[in-house]
Length: 137
Image (tube, rainbow, N blue to C red):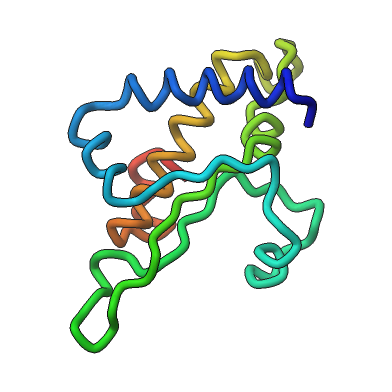
């Protein structure tokens, strides 16, 4: 990823975070977000997915609902992967096909929002079915 694309993405990312409701912003203080271009090979291997599979985000650590005295908490981190988000949104350039519009900053902005809320949901113990029902899958 070129530096200019990274800077463009990061500026949009900051705008999205600032636009989230205050309670969500407070939740994010408990779990830092790390921006990366793509997941490392180690992360992909641990998840059992291929290098070319699309991954927008990842919550690592133990969800709040599973912590206990016997199971001390581990470092909580939300990873957001720029290339996965951009690809999921359809790229930087806007277009339209038989499935509808794709690409552009607005769709990237929405995909960032969905990814962050999805991973915050995991932090609070929601599973994929819960997130799908909420529209964050």
